[in-house]
Image 1: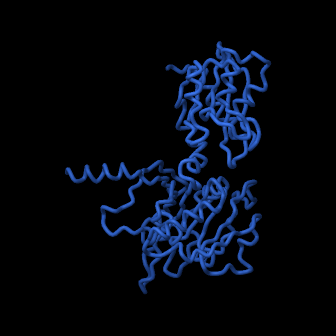
Image 2: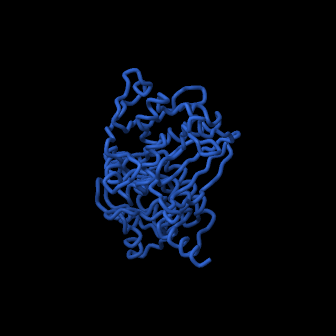
Image 3: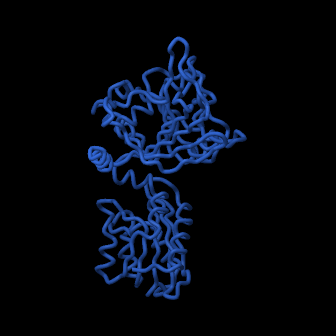
Length: 367
């Protein structure tokens, strides 16, 4: 089915207004209603849990019968269940909408199926319009729906030779101001920020999201500290606008990952009750999440500097054991982007699905 430029423009607008809604348990969704001539009739977005969904919000701005024959452009497949509100798919059918375009399928076991209901009622349905853009908007919510846990970003900064600190343990600063500003901007997009007690005691981070002038972003991630060691009373994290959550972590870390540790990390993530978690470090915590297969996105800030190991052999690698004993067990990644930040580079990558890794090994075996 063809999609015209007016409909593409409407989807871009729907994505733009979707972010007006709060980020929380429910997805941020936008909707635009077009007349048969392609003119905008109304716009709507989801204002939060318990309020009308985006499609119904847009329909509420029209007179009775005004939506008959219209096209609804929505960032997420219209829902098909009775929750705090009725199914949006049925609301569109009742309003007489003739055509529905949406970007991303609803993965919910209870809420999916809106497209099928619409099609059965004779409504023309087109899926996957600007799907990539919508997926970026809904990424954390989709992770929660599909995996039952928050979306996890693991971040670390390293020298060109893979070190996170000098032999005496000092690590501030490996990267420059542009890279640090980027980290803070990304912190502000997270619901929780996680460090281990090792990093907390070594660097005394505030774990806030700050503008380059030192002022705080409006949204702050909740600070979470994992580890058995205590947090000093005068630690900077206690001055965070949100109370720090300290989890013992005694069974979470270790050089060899077992199912029990992976399960414990997963439980900790679910206990946080948020959508997006930012793993700030250090190497022990970052490696634990990677070993457990709980990282969805990796942010690696690489500075053009060399540190090496100390004369006494002291070494501070950016990552610790990942449980890889053979090259066949390596954690293969997909490079999403490489971005220059001043003199530094930010490499954004994602762990590759197991089926892709299997294909790679098969291809290598044929050579």
